[in-house]
Length: 242
Length: 114
Image 1 (tube, helix red, strand yellow):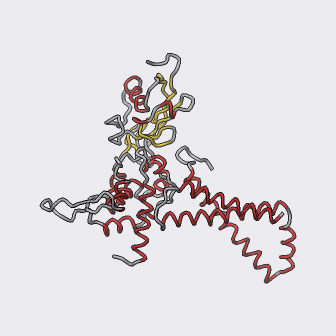
Image 2: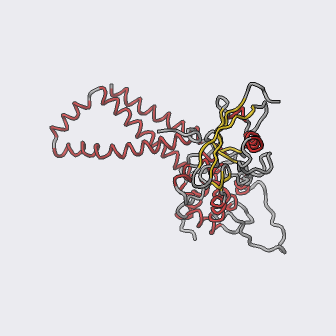
Image 3: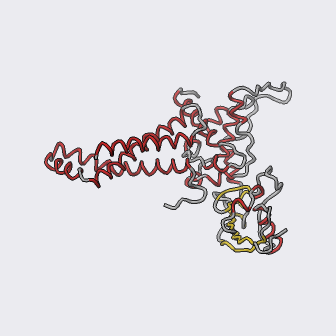
């Protein structure tokens, strides 16, 4: 039930790719309320044309990430009471991606970079081959397992100042994916992956600020993955491997 | 410099400290080489510079310079370890250790200077 006296002062970004501005709304404050609940309340009760993106509401799909008081977050898993400052919220579209409308961003550049980083599976067998045995305890599998829970929400991409400074930089999520494939015994794309991540805009464009690790809602560490890629790329160069 | 809400965490601050100390040292180097060149070309002016450098305010500025140098060295060692050695998850601890070593080195310099 709403606390009769309490309301939230919420600034929401409204606008398209060319221009926009924050608009303020008073939203009833509830005891338990996520930021996504607040956005939904505004869309249903005050601003029917407000555009935003969500699907699962339980932190599995990775589609509802937005900037909340200047920090990238899954809005569905962010409780208002943990982030509101004096009853105020500022909700904006994810940073570092083009805005389509209001709180919805164009994710194409983000996913294009996954492909550019060779973040795609490189098969070496066909469907007739036996299932390859993969021992969970090998160091390579442990390294891959540490990064595979990424759900492509782009929170790390929005948190990264290196992405903001260099639009060609592949970003933490794509490089994290490349690292997991590099350590996957079933993936045969080692040369292609190391070529892709060694180009300008690859792993060497990371400045190790660690914002990806700081904000990843799944508590992954793309910083660790990118450091691994830097190490592999450097040794490959020094050993003059093809 | 305005630290925005997604910044300001320890590793971002370590990055910024490394950047600022690097730029400050790059700006200092021409002055450093100029003073060194005085030893060859104008020894009397170098003596005058040494007397000027004995002032307390200059000593405090030198303390800052030693701190910048130390933090750039130790911060740089942390980055080299991060990129070339087996991964350590204790990056915040290592960044804090770089600051601690730098404070120790620069404070030791100041105590010897005064």
